[in-house]
Amino acid sequence: MNKLLAGIAALSLSITSPTIANAKQIVTPIITEDTNNISETSLSYGLKDKQLIAQTVARLDFNWNIAPLELAGAATRFIFNANGPEVAAYVLLLLSGHDVYVVRAKLHNTGNVPLRVYPQRIKVYYGNKSTSVIPIADNRFLQPDILRPNYYINKPVIFIAPSNLNLLRDVKMGYRDNSIQVR
Image (cartoon, rainbow, N blue to C red; front, side):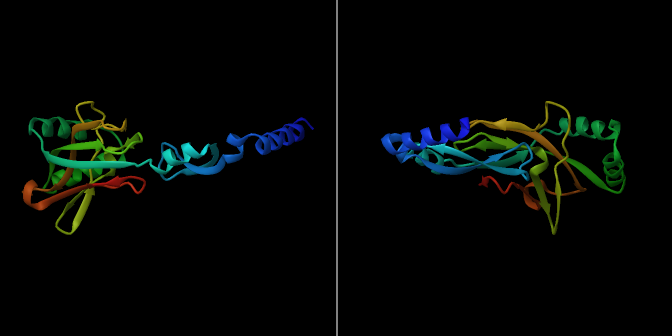
């Protein structure tokens, strides 16, 4: 009964109050930690807030360059000392003639909303093959993070690929996230 009375009171306010009468219902996606899990929630905003929502942009500039080789030794030690099912696959790749490559990835939030960034979303392309970077639990390397607007992260990442690749000529890299415009 109380909910019914509150609903009637809100309806009468919306008829008599010009600010509430102009409010519109806008559905905004709320992105959780896992970007594949997007839920929708209904939020009420005034007309001037509607313009702010329309102008929100999730944009990321992604660049990379060659990193110092001493970090490749730290990454290789991490792989050989780690535990887990994927570690055996990494060791087999290294023993079969593949090598550990280290590059510096720069992720710059050029949008106007905070972004969740993950090293696993960086893809490496060489020839007609591709791989993802390997996340390393070491703060010297890129970690999952929340990147505020106009901030950037510039940290190394590693990947395993065939030996003797020329990083400048044979490798291309990109950041893959469907919820972010990447340049």
